[in-house]
Image 1 (spheres, helix red, strand yellow):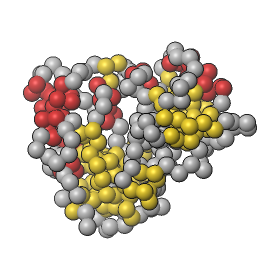
Image 2: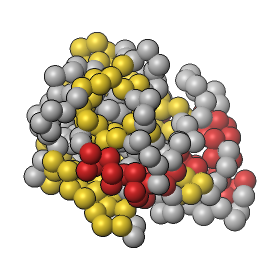
Image 3: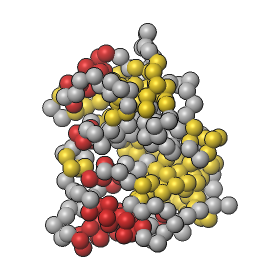
Length: 283
């Protein structure tokens, strides 16, 4: 099945707003600058919209090796992505409790800014330690930055359209959900909804120069319930119930939307919006 790359996205700060990309170099750990930083609490546990929904209002971008952050009604901040003098290395905890990720504190100025705009004390910005190798769960040869477990998330606009159609059938007053709620890296435009969710697929450019193995459907937490425009939960479990119904009969856990993906070929090549792609059976 053929289609095109509709859009691409990077999220420099884990669980904050992302950047739209017209082109990007394909890397094993993800697009350049994707999930290089995250917030942790005083227990060194990562923070996300699940605990702080208003993190959705943080706008994050990267320019000249600097993280550029904005928040409504507040003066923005620019934080160099480097190792500050005397910075301490600590181990932070993410979803997998046994997984400890070595990170580097970005410094007091960043901590003060986040504490002010989010209204939470003892909050720290950290970078993943460049000398730390974080492995992909089921692919020991691959690496990932601070994404939940895989370097890429691939979805299709047709699947979102189908989800929204089903949501409106369930509640005609619901406004359509935007793709922002699902935080993909690559959105493809293909004709058949849910085609990317089938087992054993590979997505590749039509010339075969760049390819991704669609490794694992992405089981959804509560973040899609949060409106990225307001930072508030505006929809309840109906979205997860609808996803469960759409996933019924497929050979993976219910409540999934999009596929976690790992690059197979084309590392170092440039992927662009508008490129023709195809979904094929993984050899």
